Length: 407
Image (tube, rainbow, N blue to C red; front, side):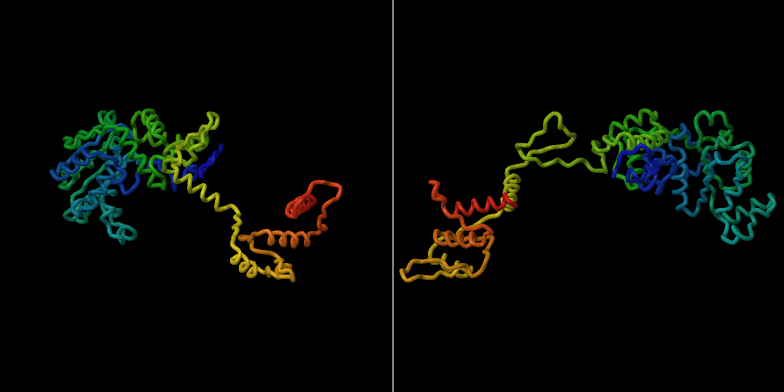
C-alpha cells in the first residue's frame, strides 16, 4: 500500500512496480513496445524487398530511431539469407572495428573461444574468410548514431562493396549531425525516413505498456491531466517524456499521497460507488471525493431484517392442555390437593429454556416464588404502615433491580 514518506529509495516497489518502467532501455518483445510507426515499417520492408544498398533514418534525439533500428534487427534475424549486424557508433571512443563486429556472430563456439582465427588472419586474407563464413548470406549493416563514424570507417564500408560483399547499410542520425557528416557519400538515400514526434495518444499507449510490463495497471500513478502536462513539458519527445514521468511518479509518492487516493487510476481500478441509506447525507464539512448512491428499498429491508435477527426473542405458548404437557416436559409437575385446587410443585429442575417461556397466572406465581426463594435476600413482605400494594412480580423486579445496584 502506498504510504506517505519524505525519504524514498525503492520508489518503484512502493508504487507496486517490479522495476523502473521509465528506463531508457529498450524493452522486449520489441514489437510490443514500438508504438505505431506503421509507415516507417513499410518503407523498411520495401528497402529489403527491392534490395537497395543505402538508407538513412533521421530524427531528433530521443524520438525513437534506436528502437526502430533494433526492431529491424529483430525482424531480419528471422531470415537465414540475411546476416544483420547492429552497431552503436556512439559507444566507441575510437575507430569502430566493423569487420570484427561482422564476423564474430558467424564463428563457431570453438573459433570464438579457442582458435580465434579472426584475430590471427592478415588483412589480405580476412575478406576471403568472411565471405566463406557468410556463404550465401548478404549483410545488413545497421549503424546507430552513424555521425560518430570516422573517415576510416566510411572508407572501409566503401571498400567492402568494391570487393563484392553483398552489403546493405542503414544508418540513423540527427538532422544537424547528418548534414555536417560525410554519410551521404555511402550512396543515394533510398529509405528517406524522417521520424516525427509521437502524438499524445501514442505516448500514453507507450507509457501504459511499459507500466503494465513492470506489474502496474494502466497509467497509474498518473491521471489524464498529469500525462498531458508532462507530454507538453517534454515537447512531445518520447525520451524526455520517460525521464519526466519517473520524476513525477516519485514526487507523487513523496508529496502527493492525496492525489493517489483521489485519482481514478489508483491501483488500476476506478472507485466503486458506496451504498448508503436514503436518509444518510454528508455535510459540507464532511464532503469526500467518493461516489455515493442511495440504497433501494429492497436493500434497506434486508438490513432491517438482519438487525431484527440479532434481538433475543421470547415466545409464549397458550392453551391449557398443551400448556400442561409442555410444563411437565420442562420439569414442572402439577399436583392436586384435597380441595382439587391446582397448585404447582417446586420445579424438579432449576433453570428453564432461554428461548421459550410458558405463561399463565398459576405458573407465573409459582415461578416467582421459586426465583425469589433462591435469592440471597429474604422474601419481601408487605409493610403494614404503607398503603402501596406490590404484586409478587413487582416485588421480584424490585428485588432484582436492587440486587444489580448492589453489585
